Length: 113
Image 1 (cartoon, rainbow, N blue to C red):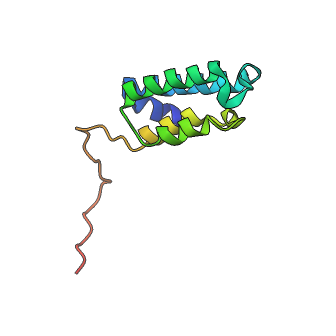
Image 2: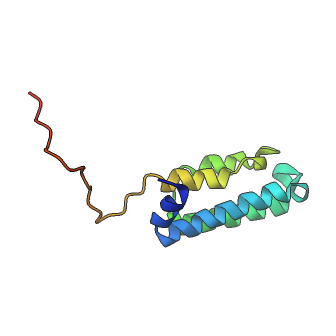
């Protein structure tokens, strides 16, 4: 399954969460000179608070957001896309309810004794 197939199979709010996370990480990586102060940078902190609020609204509370927020306190940790990694972790196990499992054709395996 390619990333595009995976992305299209997500719910709209999950796709929006991916877009927000990628945009936030790209902004922090590309605009790194603006946020170079690390944990004391007000712009970086404000961006992280807004992204955290949006992620919780879109995906609900998840423990994966705590290490992401903690990593932002370490200077230069913004060079790693932590929000994107957290969104991937939160959305990777989401199974759409109502979908049925499709088994391959052929006879069912014999039960083990």
